[in-house]
Length: 135
View (cartoon, rainbow, N blue to C red):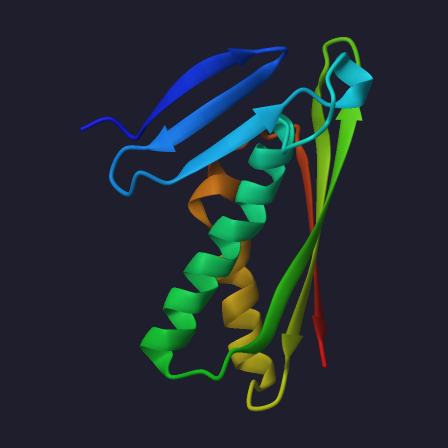
């Protein structure tokens, strides 16, 4: 079974439909690349996917181990480079309520985050800066 079907809607916009769930999302070219920037750009999605993936695998590990995981959020910042145009750096600022998470638990969850499938699938020269803040 395919993962998704993507249709070009014109004006540098696409619509992707997830095969299994039927959910959809739009992409739009960013203003700095001749688009309107009215939706995630493909590179926004790629950068955001890193945060979504690491949060998912951390959530799985926390659930499996019975670790408390509250106030878990991430802020993603994408940096572009030219010649060729590409994502050069992704910064992910992760915030977690640290109550109930000792140093060993935190180290374990951070390692799980750094080795999520998306992180391991990105090019080696794409800088991934993951910063954890515990409150």
